[in-house]
Amino acid sequence: MHLLTALLVFVVVTVAVFSAVSLLDERQARARVLRDRLSLVQQPGAEPTPEVALLRDEVLSRIPAFDTWLRRSERVSLLQKMLAQGNVDVRAGNFLMLCAVSALVLAPVAFFAGGNLMFGWAGALLGFFVPYAYASHKRNKRFQKFEEKFPEAIDTLARAVRAGHAFTTAVELIANEVAEPVGGEFRQLFEEQKFGLPVRDALLNLADRIPLVDVKFFVTAVMLQRETGGNLAEILDNLSYVIRERFKILRQVRVHTAQGRLTMLLLMALPPTIVVMMLIINPSFILPLFKEWLGHVAIVVAITLQTLGYFVIRRIIRIQV
Image (tube, rainbow, N blue to C red):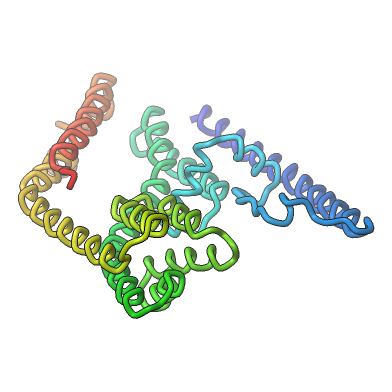
């Protein structure tokens, strides 16, 4: 108990000191930026450098010191990319702070519920990854919705090209007529090429933002057609047909793997359900599992085996098409 209290006091004091230093650093950084801009403007005939005029750096946190520290990690950049793909309007720095707060909240709850420091660390670990699991879930749901609407966007693009519109005009039609998230991604594609980015680079950015197989096929087909020529409308019609047929096969695969998914759900839900029922029916029978050290070892082994079984069954029932 005293160790947990000391740990919480240490974390609170550290966060407070870091916040105060960061705010001071932020004010100094703003003043330094203003001085640099004023000195640049006051110079006769001075022009902004290409880095200032053309590049916009992605800010991971509004706190300069924290932002500088986050930029050193490639994983934080990947986290920011995942948040953008899931349409989670939170910066990576704020998201990591949210994970830390969630860990600090669940740690004492798990500690008092289990009565052991091991449960406190397990609660902290679980609390840290809960926001990440939520963001990953939103990303997957957005990708699934994109896949459902993407054939409609390709058909709209093929009809516009067949009617005589230019490719960029057809992209603008998709941005205005197709629902989100496809419309938003194609709107960004249109705006990037509109402001001077080559169409090839804008298409590659689309494939980077939406790393789906169908999008890669689309980008590759359009880039090849623009370089070698050909009937773009016919290419898009064939691509749309292939995507729809692939979805048809995926639905058939889901039907054939329904039993495996149900088995996975039952095996994952059965142990905690039995534990809860035993706590209600006969608590003296199950309480040694939480009070004795041998019971703690059994819980760790059970959770580890459950996790391994979940990934094994998930790999068996996940068939790539």
